[in-house]
Length: 98
Image (cartoon, rainbow, N blue to C red; front, side, top):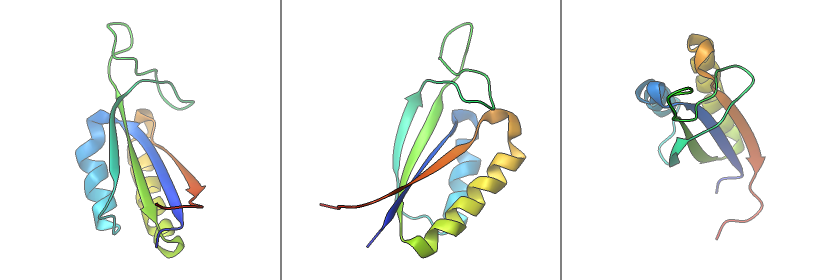
């Protein structure tokens, strides 16, 4: 049973690469949240406007603790390749699954 949730947010322009990297790291199940707007500390705002074009995507990935590091390493690799695209990940404990 999964014990943690990895929440990864990234520029929609790199989705194909991100999906491939995460699948290679062992991800088989996830929830996608498309069309997100926002601004991080490492990238320009993505507000889907004429001034700040583009959107972000988030994946929610429920993992067991032993899977977490493989997933995070794939995200770190993508963050290194796409420094200007604003790749970020957060890990939360899962206390209940219904």
